[in-house]
Image 1 (tube, helix red, strand yellow):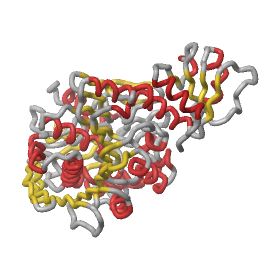
Image 2 (spheres, one colour):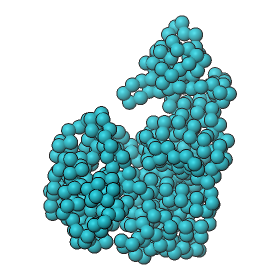
Image 3 (tube, helix red, strand yellow):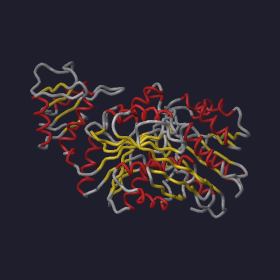
Image 4 (cartoon, one colour):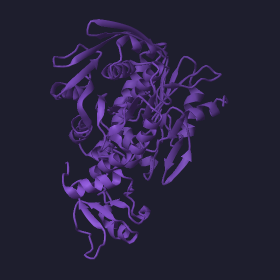
Length: 485
């Protein structure tokens, strides 16, 4: 909701002139602005007295409930303080003046792979790119390990300003449903908005699939600039619905026959999918691109199409997409772990039922003698997906190895009990709560004719147990067990 009044306009002008803004009352200095953001557990308005004690000159809040009668500062009312922060950040960092194209990628699965593909596409065509996502925030000469898929609002605008200073020509961002729902992307306007799919995840936060979808849809309805191009996967029902109803320019992509609708069709014909990779034809209007890729699995064919769609939306010619043939993958996304024993071991970030289904079906179709899957479920997250993840593993793996993921504050044995009903149809189940030991057990059994997929943690370099973060990386554990580190 836009606020148009003299008081708000004056504050925006002051922040644009360099006045500092904080959402943490303990960081406020004399003359600064404090924004009281309501949270799921704590309302920032409760800290207004502390901000005033520290000398805040302006306080942005949605009501005067915590405002003392004798306050010397100026209270600026805003119905949505989280959005107010985005507008203030945009004023401070002059976000609207940044010359680069801003590409947002949302969806349950595939965001990281698509963002890496778009980054590679741009760089291979001599365009300077920035990326913000699950693994890192990076631009030419800088790599910062990420803490959140989409950082907090002020940090987000600051990172974009740093990228603008080194003349990046495009920034591709993974945009999480949490960040859309919490308005962490407020103040941004995307030139290209991509959605890969929508499957069950984060219901511990959103509550229902409808609410989850509504959060994702905000990327297209609320955070895109006029004239933006939407890129949507018609193979996915939720994306197909958006494709039928969304106003403005859209590119639809998929591996099945294009549905009817007012969009430009990017049609992929998958010619082969083997352990060596993919081969497909990409049809765009009256042109055809033949593309061979070392990526494995049908889901990666869709990810390639999403990246091509983003490139086309930025005005790149179809022939420039040929460079994607040399993209070899993303850390922790069906990442092969080379080893002296010649074992086929892959590490993948799949931590939803749909992602497990995609990865395991892709690997199973390569024809291994036996398919092993080491997996677990995260603690303090959606419990309803746990048996569904077990069911996905039971459907494809010959040996399901159930273990811990990041148990956080939950009892890991209780988490495993929640998964067990889904494994009722599994050919064989091994239960081992210690993740390192579970990986060792699978490696000890398998032969070079088998395949092992270690799912759930992918690129992560830690395991969260209780409130402690322990060093742990699946690929590193494989190398240590096989003595190839």
